[in-house]
Image 1: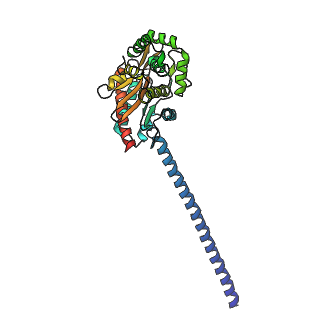
Image 2 (image 1 turned 180 degrees about the horizontal axis):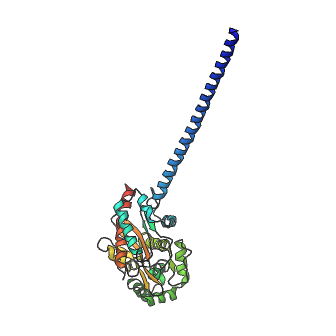
Image 3 (image 1 turned 60 degrees about the vertical axis):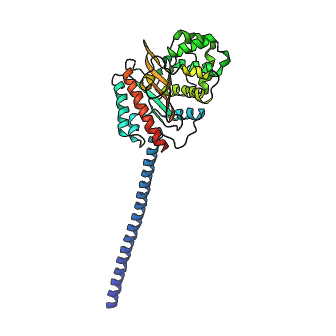
Length: 322
């Protein structure tokens, strides 16, 4: 009888032990699986954060860059139509400088005007953009690339009369001089120039086409390539026309600190535009700057934006090269 009760008790103890071991094993497996899942989720989250951080900085700097015509055009093509929030996510830009740029943009846009820009450093590929794919009326900015196309591709065809027309078309933005040159040299010349700059969507037949900041910047990549990399016998004279053109707010904003080579465009009729684009020369090399807007009456504000972008260029290039 005692032996039977002992057997029953032993069996019960065995069952209890089995249940305890089973429960412990299930708990162990659960902790292991959930822990692994937590670690995986945490790793995935960290990876996403790292990727987001990288994406927020790609518009600012490249670790290595080949400053060739093709690389610069590709760099401009790679820029996305960014917004001001991106500025505060970059470790390369101080909060004070980002605030200055944001204030300059907001001041212009507070009057219901639109503005977009692209800035690209030639040496490092460091870049920043805003509304870079918005379309603006290009106005007389197109005269710059057209005159460069004549000088670059048809230097032996330029007559003394043509030289005078080219100078007038750039320095005082004379429309009649531009019309005469356009009539003489045709649309195909500009089409070839735009193709070389990988800007196929620009209307080649319009004397004053609509442009995006990215498209106009790519045309100025071509200008830079001609002025400073592969010049010909006409390059020095042609480049000189761009040093202080009438109504260039980039020139006016930076003339005391940097040489510039720019061509503005403006109109206040059925279409409204106040644009400027060109090359800025600094102690650290050159950078391309394009600013397009409908802010016709806001020249001072556009000059403030130019100065803010120049300050940002200094910060970004310094960060990229350190």
